Length: 381
Figure (cartoon, helix red, strand yellow):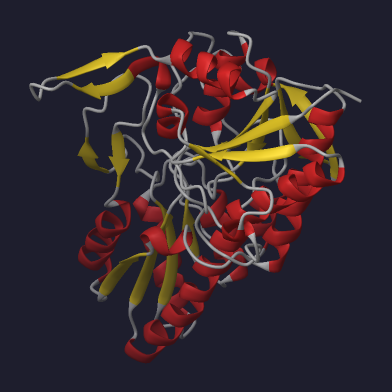
């Protein structure tokens, strides 16, 4: 067993249900082995500013397994290798403050840093490990797109929220003979859209992995009408796009290199307008948005988070650093961060969703794809 005395926990990226459950599991496992747990406030911002708090014995960290959000909060669109600095005169510049982070960890006596986040965060974890920081990643994202693990925490809750929304939209669709569309998150991966479509009884699911042909969607709707089904329910992933077309972008931001500067949005509304014109039926879009990321985690996510947190601490105690905690074939394990980042080798280039990112997207031979086709869900191809 390693001689751990102090560990730090850091969260980066959008919130996901279950963050507090992971933190709780790390704290509890650390306590059993006499290790102190600290949390950096607001993720990378806290690491740069050396702003942290003791978690062991802190009332803030008590009774948190059911709480949404994160007691230590999170950084968003922040890259310590290209950190946004506002000078006294109001000018903005970007600086590599990774060495500041490394020195802060040394000064604080942090023996291992646990980094909770998605593909961008795990890329940053790998980059910090190359500077001598002992890190362990825990896969957090509702998008379920982190490479090398079967599932990320927060995903199950997001699917559950989307499924409940579909249940509610079904009643309106049937009552008013409408096409009801639900746009869900996921960016470049369609896991939320596909699983919620299956669970929620949707007729169509449009995914980023399958550029859709609108004619196929219209055929599905018309076929339902011929069978006396004068309504349809459709799930559209925010990253879905038509054949020969492009992804719907809500906003392009200038947040510097290595952060997500493209905000997706509008895919569901685009489909609604097109279908209304093509079918003559009223089509309405509902964008679920941040409802998927907030609130109480499901029991499934609470258990998964506890397993991930405890396993991550076990890895640290074993001296198994610079790895991602993963779940493969139902068993907890770890994998080197080098394998997680794939071809995205440039130091400081932490943005996910690029050609070099090793994202986990849906393959066409996945059982979920086969299941959807078997029960007649149109995937737009």
